[in-house]
Amino acid sequence: MSLAALTCASIGRLTVSLSIELPSSYDLSTLPDADVATLAKEGREAAFRELVHRYERPVFSLIFRMVRDRETAEDLAQDTFVRVLNHIDRYRPEFKFSSWLFKIANNLTIDHLRKRQLDTISIEGSPHAATSAEAEATSVDVRSHDESPLEEIESRELGSAIERAIAQLRPEYRSCILLRHVEGRSYEEIAATLDLPLGTVKTYIHRARHELRDALAHLRT
Image 1 (tube, rainbow, N blue to C red):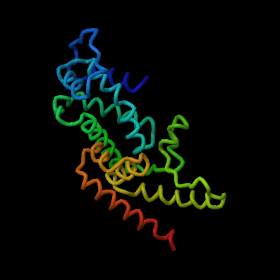
Image 2 (spheres, rainbow, N blue to C red):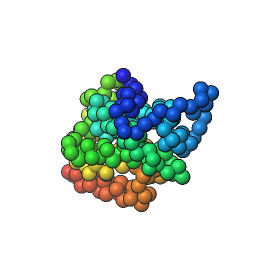
Image 3 (cartoon, rainbow, N blue to C red):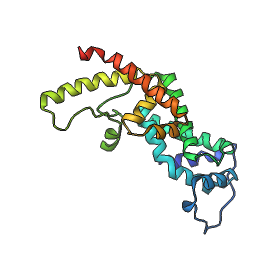
Image 4 (cartoon, rainbow, N blue to C red):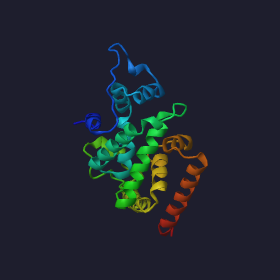
């Protein structure tokens, strides 16, 4: 069963009622997020399903990169949308819906990491990846394309040290570092995704890099 099906199947068990039907000719796919969210706030189930359809994969991807376990990522993604549904009335349309959504997803994931103290960063990709695409999406590539076999081995040894060092970062630092250096997002995009001030994002990444340099200092001697 897909994440969307799992999430929407949970609607009936929630205290929020989404029962108002939209006209069959109403094309939600043409509306901006803020308008669809407003319709969801009015109790229109189709509008909430549209939001899930738009963001189930990006939310899952963000969480999967953090926890690197497919089942856990699916559970946390579903929890994210359930929380969005329960608190959709708190969304303010003058702000980007995606920023509000990703902040919820990030906070839930960080809470999970703190409780479980997960140590699951791997340059090879998550051992729980179901497909090669998922493994590639959760890997950290430290190789150069023109390396010799010996240099590739050295790079992989360095990569193993890097993955251990990243795993020791605070969850907030880890999320920023992964978004920056694995997903290649700009500081501004990270700030929007995590709903953090731009200065805070830069501080987190600066501190994370400092901690990583200290953790990897022995490799430079």
